[in-house]
Length: 115
Length: 115
Image 1 (cartoon, helix red, strand yellow):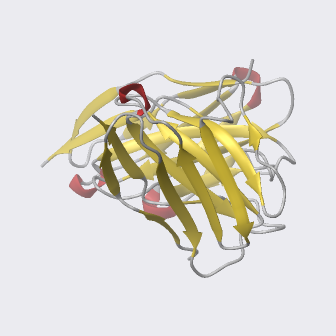
Image 2: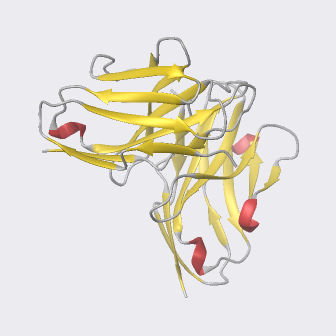
């Protein structure tokens, strides 16, 4: 089946620094990638939808200047958490879908801890 | 507003017991429905999905789900659970035809199967 990877799997950073998380589709071309955030004991919340070559669409309440998304190629999307604060600590999960395919394939997630 | 609710946050069963996990959705239109499973330490995997047609959907690992439009429900079932079914289960939805749309997830059900 389709494989989606994320890097890094976990990251610890100091407050005020920026962190970049990569999401790659390994064996298919992902025209659309999605970024979700999962809080402890809570559901996944869609943050933004990223289409290759165009600007990401952010969900209501998600700061686009805080969470920068770039989908520069059909196999890579990046999420950069800028000026991270402790409240940004969370589990970030990406998913990807190919054109014409309804199913999203999920990455393993990245655990971010901001000290 | 679009929402997905899962009634049971924690379920504990013995092996060979039957399982039913509830899922209800609230959407202003026709929906596509999904059940995902997240085994400990692993990424989300698709169990089954419903787009149209036969409301009884069979998925992997012996799981099935029934779409009942009048009840806005999509409950997950398995006649006889195994210890290896211990995992987190998520119901998700999106508007039909929204292949490029992100999913709305329920809060998840943590299923523990006791040997």
